[in-house]
Amino acid sequence: MNAGETGLGPPMLRLGVILPFLITGTIWGSTWFVITGQIDGVPAAWSVFYRFALATPALFIVAALMKRRLTLTAPEHRLAVMVGLFQFSGNFLFVYHAELYVTSGIVAMMFGLLMVPNALLARFFLGERTQGGFWLGSVIAIVGVSFLLLHEWRANPDAGVIGGNVALGIVLAMLGILAASVANVIQANPVGRGVPMVSLLAWAMLYGTVFDLGFAFLTEGAPPVPTSATYWGGIVYLALVGSVVTFPLHYNLVREIGAGRTAYNSILTISVAMVISTLFEGYQWTLLTAIGMALGVIGMVFALRSKQKK
Image 1 (cartoon, rainbow, N blue to C red):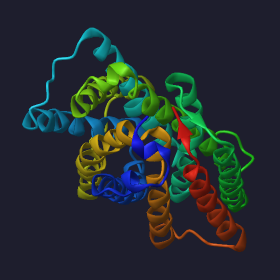
Image 2 (cartoon, one colour):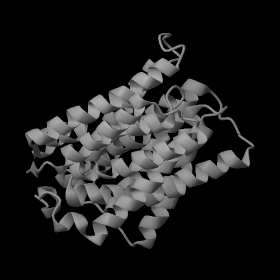
Image 3 (cartoon, rainbow, N blue to C red):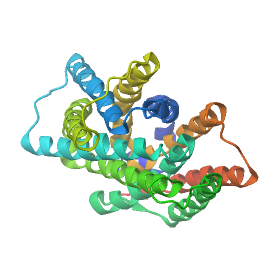
């Protein structure tokens, strides 16, 4: 068990932990809104592919500059395939499509509940146990997020129409959460711990990008060629800043302090995303949403303060 998993003691306060938290939380908080510009008039599947088609070679270059080994064993390649399919395909395809129906800040808030499947899967695959306080906090957070989703549902006049509604967006977001959680946990197994993180992510991103390409062709046909400078600026930001910079930091945190503890940065991510959604998407706050936001954050903090045991 890593020292940082035993609670909020000194290991959690080290600069090497705080800085990655702040960087990933702030950047990812902004990416939720940037994604909305990537699905405006361009099929979501192709935007996911464009993002990682640019990010993948950049990540291989980073690995080479860091002098990390890029040759993987067969088991390591199999792990990279799994991480790629769940993280860089399933997770992002679900998220991009979810934002067609649900406000970006709300999708970000839902992803704050990533700690719940993280804990369940870490218990099953890694033997990490969670105390009762974790589940109590999780229930509080789920109630809070439910209030936000209820507001979103009421604000959408077509909420009951299957195929173009909030309900579909919620389901897609939940599937994205599950996919991300699987990727978080499986990469922390003994095989994954033996691979340089940036190398594993580079190969995983490559495999995921190949799948994204096939999926986009099968579901959307020929690739569009957007001409908007804003669109391509968003692609560059999401690929290089939102992916190449953040994913190595994120997964190193998962290895160092555990998947459950790493979910702490979701609180900062949510805060940044909701502020941006309020300023640029016209998100309207009500008493219900304010209570929901408060319960969500309080529940997450309470849950994540509970100890995990190996």
